Image (cartoon, rainbow, N blue to C red; front, top):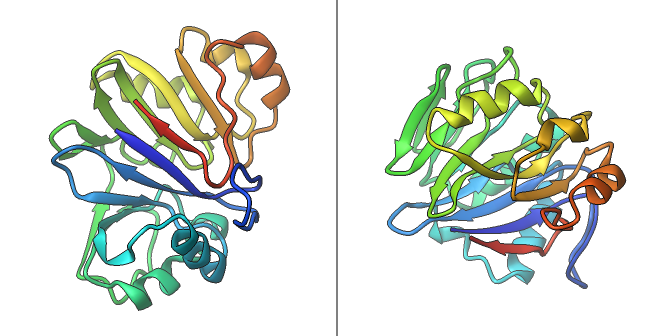
Length: 212
């Protein structure tokens, strides 16, 4: 699998624009290309996608982690350019218009072979889980649910290898045992995570590409 961070508070690649929010392109062999969240600003989202060479028309699905504006603010702009997509939303999210199909997710769900949703946890957020040869990789929007619940939900699909995305107030100790930690967006304890897990920690930011 390959994860390309499109929208984040920080930059890895010069020429992109940083802003508060998160979005990433998820590419898995034999699975439609998935846009995970859409950041908080449609103009920045589309601009960064263009500079990263991402063809909007090649994206077939959009996965929304939760309804906060910094994760859905670019959705309408994206759909204005490509509305031939299936949009996976948590059950608490309403208001998607102009998409080919909208699928509401409540419980843990298989989206494709090796690609799953944790289901909406604690009534606020779902995470995407991808099975790789190294184990399950979680892509999280903000990790508003307790990390123990996210990890438990993901572990039903296999051993969890790592996590990419916003980790909000996650206590670093709760990530013990993971082989990949890419903390982005709203993460409050990045420095401590990097100190505790120097071999697992990967710096995030718009333009970062992670292949597993």
